[in-house]
Length: 307
Image (cartoon, rainbow, N blue to C red; front, side, top):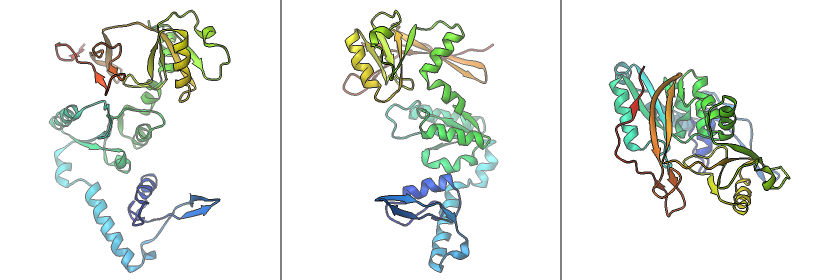
């Protein structure tokens, strides 16, 4: 492999991933077939003199492409004080920030002397080029967003969301326990465990229907269902237990909107309202053909809180 490039058909993606994990310009990796399965032998670095003359030409071309793609021009380095990477997924169905918001981030950054670049998961090997990483993909633990956040933090970058924040805030079970421990008013609820042999009726702990059943790491109203009776609860719990060992069952408290509070470095920055989809009890309605989102009523711009 030459800077993550491989000329064997079908192995280009594997070569790129290996280079992201082991950023060595020249790397040899062999696939060995054992017990009817292909296994990757430990990769080993190569020296330039180990290459044949024609392979040295390929190395020079790969080096040229890698240099043009990675390093920034001296002009960009003089113009901006800092370099910010924004991690996005162009194919994400429900991205945290749409194209308009991303363009606004870029404009705002450059007004402040920050060079803003949009990157994807394929750019994990470039993280050390930047001063900060802003994640605008939906985060999850067993996911490249968490791995890239860990890598960026290890490299000394400022990271939003940090690995610790992803660990805490993507877990509804953790938040439920934290709010209860701190005495913050929140919907009453109970944890359901997949291995619990007791009938569900014995685990309701005094809760009355209707109720809301949630997977710990659901987002954008996914993995969150409303149940109106015991039969519906048993059906939905059985379905969700296929993907999660824990479920959170909470009382249903309907509201017109959710409050979202933005906090940075211990300081409250803003408070905003997320309205429910029309005729639905969630921000996103996945029951219709296609996904319907809330249409906010006319209201002032997002309010910034200043001391």
